[in-house]
Length: 331
Image (cartoon, rainbow, N blue to C red; front, side, top):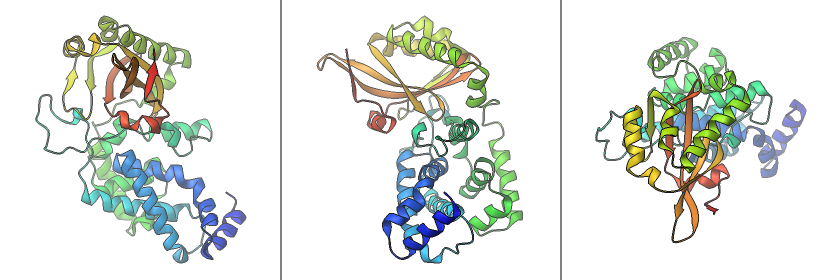
């Protein structure tokens, strides 16, 4: 948005024109929601946080100093809203955060997947898309949950969004020294919690045809009920989990035994999906009574080279519409 256009819309919005305010903030809506998702680990919470942030921005528009783009000011409001929510809620978990066989807390807040279609900058150039997708990979968002609220905000604002230390200090009402200290502590916490290579780098090292071939082979193996083919695609230390179920499985023998127990005794259909910048599928289970395949889960697949290192199967069919997936698939 050009400075002149933004200035005109800002003036109209300050005079009470809600349509002008909508035009003013719409270019930043997706990236702000993605920011809230990184902070909160929940698509639902991110939507609520964004809506509340925009309401607060509308109410406080008269206090915007108009010394540049409205974007940093919107990030200030959205970040502060997320910080407040983090203080009130449990951190988001994945089953693999728990020890195998461990009894989870009475109430676990599970990490949720995020649709690529809502990523900020997804409609811009390849580099911007790469950064946006890398910043929502499941392993990264899960690792962020182990940071304090302040460390999380600083790391995202500095290393994902590219704000300077001075800008972050201004956004968070703190000092540059405090920002740099929080960033160092955040990096130490994340050390060892992240894969050595991101999914964007892994998939980028493979040509598109190879990625499609591997993804199709995985889906076909499930649809054919071919346990051997599925296991052959896994790394030796592969992990398989199904939030909100706390149980998860690691290694060929454990995963094979799980698949033979029930999942591969029924019929499946897989539809490609776009989530967290990773290879993903909407999975559908055959329903004899209805004579259709019904929504079952959203599978996010993490590759290590040409092998699958992790499958996180979110058994949350209620979120399918947000990923553009149907509720059922006919025979």
